[in-house]
Image 1 (cartoon, rainbow, N blue to C red):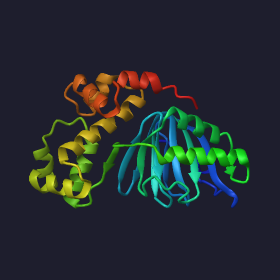
Image 2 (image 1 turned 60 degrees about the vertical axis):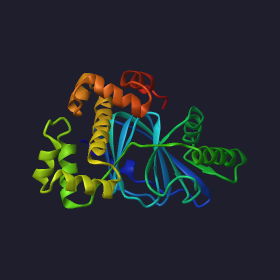
Image 3 (image 1 turned 180 degrees about the horizontal axis):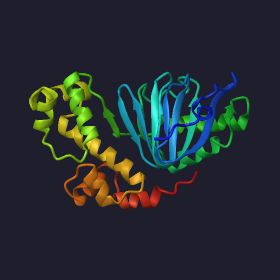
Length: 265
């Protein structure tokens, strides 16, 4: 993966009088923003492409026309799948109080999309300006109402469960049974199931299903065909993958990427 230029990933804090600052940037496929954190709360919106945010607590996949909420001081990295157009808004801490104090992927309504794009036309917004104050308040009001979507892959901490998670992530299309994967990690499937439920609140099967969906989104964003993405992600057939995709995102993968792959930047 290519390294991001340092002058891109270093965020300069806004002037004291600014409540909101913005950054707009386009990234090539495979680019990575290394681990960093911000003193402000952050909303990163994907106009185009798919972003994957990693923290010590897990991973979040951010499809086109969705956004990820990253609270202040949370160390994170961002990997790009496909050409990514990112529009980021930084909020003074706790300016947005309705969103969780953990990372979350959120739906972006057409209205919120337009507000984000409008805000990103300026590097900062100041409440001393009547027009900018109204824009800030409008964005905050919309964010207070957004729906979070379950596109998170939490990371277990137990060494045995962690080995299972790493194996499944590294071999998404592998047909090795879960029993064998668990045995190779040094525990029975029953033990690993218990650990996953305790530490991720997902069953092992549900965790694997989530991991496969996230992998398929990365592959499709990179331009892979649906059949290849389905098999590479570990689905037995393309139809099984399409059914799962539709149940999670409300539309087939073909329609999703045809309709959102050219989101306005």
